[in-house]
Image (cartoon, rainbow, N blue to C red; front, side, top):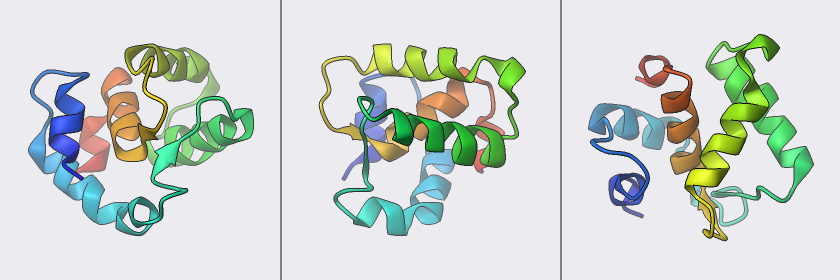
Length: 103
């Protein structure tokens, strides 16, 4: 999958170094059809993203309006049934100003 091309649909000038680092970090997750996409209709999955990605990986807290970030990214990708996990993660990190954490 061309993650840069996918990201360019939602943001201008995605950082290629960050995308490359994310591809390497999440290679195993992205290689599995079920885990390569995010289901915004699954509240349990969104809770896992908040706990494992936003809090553990990006170092955010509940005071950072995690739900608001998820909603903002969901709104950007509205109409996309199969939301690519790397794209969602990148847009979340961008939303919270945490792209440097993913390098």
